Length: 344
Image 1 (tube, helix red, strand yellow):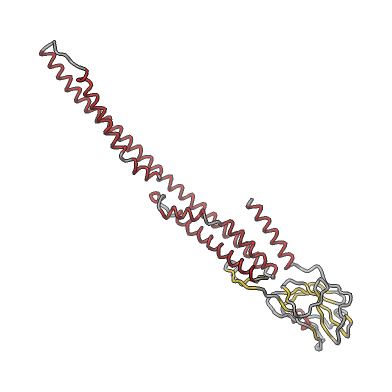
Image 2: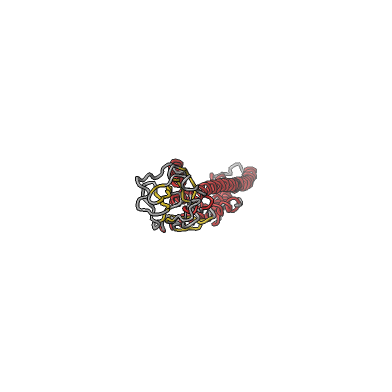
């Protein structure tokens, strides 16, 4: 499910970047491009055949068709123009040349743009400048540059998403280090339990998706390359952090298994020792008492063959031996609380 969501996000990003930063394939074709003009004038049209008036701002990546008019008539390119020097104009690139016009793409970094400055041999040319939409700005630590967004809301959402993502990355890295360095006798410490809880609550995958979604509007403002950088960097960094987390959990599990093995051995020693001790105490005590009773019987029978023996004389050593056995087991049983602490 996560892979499918990521694929959809990347596809959407590619479409946005392609739509906003790719080479223009369309151009304006107004029926009367120089209508209403006098003298030598440069006019500009959007792909919708709407003439640019110099008041409205346009995003970088916008396609603009430029005409040079002389007394209301479109002049042939390049002969009547005298040529066009793109190096003389900051903020535009030439996409194509046509019979009476050239197609330009607006670029970021310069505001306003004055394409008429590139028309050669027409020092008297007039015409409007083109305002570039710089949008709302946000500093990106991931891209290490200033990002532009079409609205204050989009800029704020990106800043919030990036902060959350950076905190999540820091949480995973910090707590992965804690688990990587844990010793077998500290697998149940409060620091380790806090580290595990922090890793479970980091939501790194979701925060990465949120960051990448929040940066897409910047592509519409002409920051397509920066958007691609953030997507690639966030994916790479998150993957490295997840790998480190998996390795740290593996180290923790190994330490916990060592602790558990030691605990099992202690259980065996305590319980086994209690049983053996009880058996030894019971056996020794029972043997001594039995031997004493048998000696007494032998002496009594030597004195008189009429001596009588009751079952109590034989049962007493047996009872005392059982009590000694239970006492030995109790010694081991008293250790169980400590053993449970070790295991847990």
